[in-house]
Image (cartoon, rainbow, N blue to C red; front, side, top):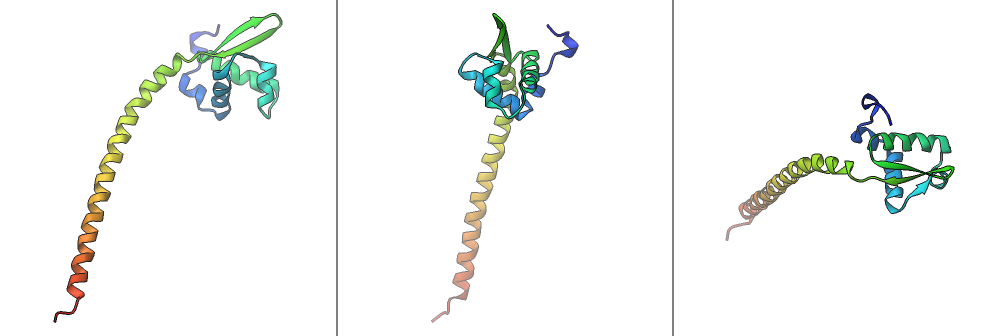
Length: 125
């Protein structure tokens, strides 16, 4: 078990696209590194390094079965990430709602402007 100072942050662990792919792969089932490495265009050693980072962040669990080490997703640390992201989801939902309201009002105002210009240009009989 790594010392607390060596423990990887969940955010750092998922920052890499390869590690995110590993998490998706392990969401389906537990696998040994030999099988996992077949899904990636890199060496087994490189895949093992990525798995070690995920394990240090608590995102995957390692289990020795005979001579091989099996890995499985440990989703609990993702709850912290989800909670953190939910704040920004609310922020963006609010911002997007305000933008939608603004655009809709601009469209209405623009339509009124076009209509009034059109009315001004019509010849009077």
